[in-house]
Length: 251
Image (cartoon, rainbow, N blue to C red):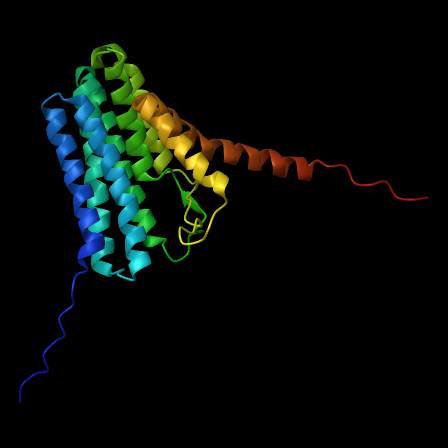
């Protein structure tokens, strides 16, 4: 009696091509950092971020989601948004700080791993409107944008080493906080939008094209601070409710 043959599980090509592309971009960023080509390394991180944002949406839109794709995406994120930014920042600015430099880079790298592990275990219970902790692609963009702007303005890593350590520690710690950051997952690309939204998108691309390093860094600095601002606003709002005086009783 022969055993029934297990049905082969196929691997969806289209969404995983985007994931592999993001992985390649992260690896390319590491290689360019080792060759001291900082602008190429920073741009590669942003390309990885775009591809990472597309793979999930493509999988959902085409009905090609799979457990394999989810695992591959997580591993790709660890390379592109965990290891690569930490190494880029270390080689660029933190190397001269000795032990503190590589410890700061490791804090970021380990925070990215913890952030991804928490994200994977809370997929079913998390509020889809928000991320818990700064998303690893945004943290990586913050680090890469900083390096890109410093190079654009002619600063060497040694001149901004302590500022670089603050940036990478801020990005790393923000990833493992319980702060809420807007996810944008409720945006439905299949629905029609008003014409002015299209105009805003065009203006956004024009703004980015005028000066990519500064504009992208500003965007992700504001996004990185948005979680802290949202938490502060919620705390003040709750405090205002608790201290609100009770209405006087009618005589």
